[in-house]
Image 1 (cartoon, rainbow, N blue to C red):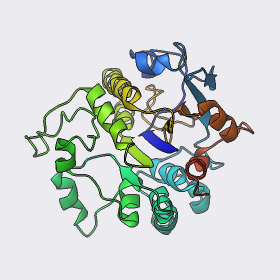
Image 2: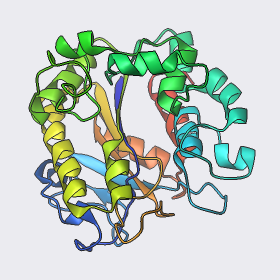
Image 3: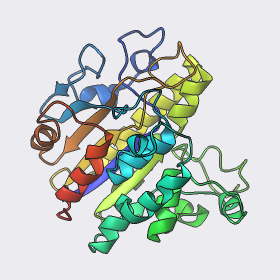
Image 4: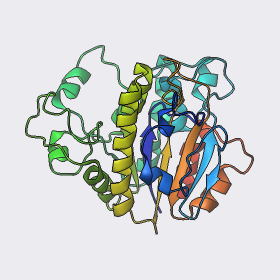
Length: 308
C-alpha cells in the first residue's frame, strides 16, 4: 500500500452558496466526477460513490477560538492534539513548545524510522534556502518536519527534471523567483509528475497553500482560479495514479476559502476525500464513530503503511 496526501491549506466544508463559497462557483469537473456531480457541503458532509468517499474532519479539537495553521498542521502531521496541548489555536507557524512534538512524532520521521520511503513533493527556490540560513528564520510545519526528519527539500533542479511540483502547480511564478529556466507546465502535467513520485515512494505529500491565501484575500476571482488549477492538477493525478495499490487523500487544516464573507478562518469541518485502493473500507474505519478529526490522519496513514 502507498499513500499520496494532497494538503490544501485553508479549505473547509461550507454552504452551497456560490456567492460566498467559490467551491460552488468554480468549474471543478474532476472533483465532481468523484461523487457523481456532487461536492461536500454543510448540507451533505459525507459523500460516497464507487470512485471515492468523503467524510468531515473536526479541526476545532475541543479548543475555543478559530483553528490556525500552526496547531492544525501539527495535529494533522503528528496525530497529537496540538491546540489542546498548548491551550489555544496558534499559527501560522508552530508554537515553540510544539517543536519537540514535531521533531519526535512527525509523519516523515516515523515512516523513515520504520524503513518506509517518503517524499515531500514541493520544490522551493534558492531564496527559500537562503532564508532558512538566517538566525531567526521561521519554518512551516511541513518544512520543519522535513528538516527534523532529514527529508530533502526539493530544489529547482528536481522541478526542472519533472521530479517535484511547484507550490503554484504550474511553475508560473518561478521566473520572478530568480529561475527563468523553469518553464510553465499545464496543471494536468504537474499532476502526472506528482503521481509518478508514488512509484518510488511509500508516502508522498504535496502542499497547496494558495487556497488559504485566496481565502484571506476574499477574492472570488483568485479563489476560483486556484481551485480550477487544482482541479486540472487532479486530472493528471487520476490519470497517473495506480489505484490498485495507492490511496489518494485530500484534506485541510482549517476552514477559510469556503466562506469569503469573512477574512478570518472558520470553525467549519474540513473534508477528507479518499480515492483509490479500498477507499470505502478505509473511510468506514476512520469515521466509525462519526467523530473523526485532524489527529486521526497520521495514525491512519501509519496503519495503512503497516507502521502502527
